[in-house]
Image 1: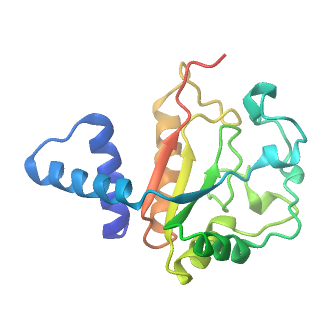
Image 2: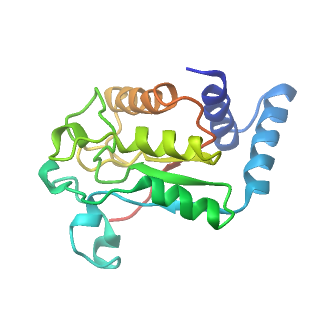
Image 3: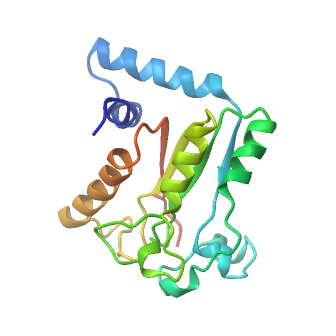
Amino acid sequence: MNKQALNCLLAALLLVGGAAGSKAQELSKDLLLDFVNTRYHAYFHWNMCTFKNINSDEHFGRSTGKEPPSMWAPTGMDIEQWAQVVKQSRMAGGWLTTKHHGGFCLWDSQYTDYDVASSPVKTDVVRVFVDTFRRHGLKVGLYYSILDYHHGIENSTVTPDKVEFLKNQITELLTNYGPIDYINFDGWSTWP
């Protein structure tokens, strides 16, 4: 894991769990201050729900994790255009939903076959996003849902094996794509 990715993960853990030690607190504060001062980003929430033709109020617009990988069939994917719009809008960067609550991964994860590699369009969206945004000098943020309906990871179902699965996927994201400026963990809720 590269130093920036490790710092990103450390800061996230420190902010959630409380910092121990002055150096850790200082790192956490510096990263949080950088995030707050950046202010203006785009968020690309592009996942299985994009292809379900449902409104955002229906099941909170969520994937159930039962959609077949064949449903992932984007056409006209133009992440270069996304980056140009972000840059023209004077945003600092963008965030990509790498995996939402349904569990479908926008990269070829070695820990599941519920991902782009098992779909008709095998493009590693995370790779294209990160490389394109970085080439344009934009910051890169990744969103990752801990909640995962496809793999049965919900509030009351966590086991050591499932924690290991999550850690492995997060490690893939923070080691296979170069420096990641920000990561957002989501999906731990009390929704029915």
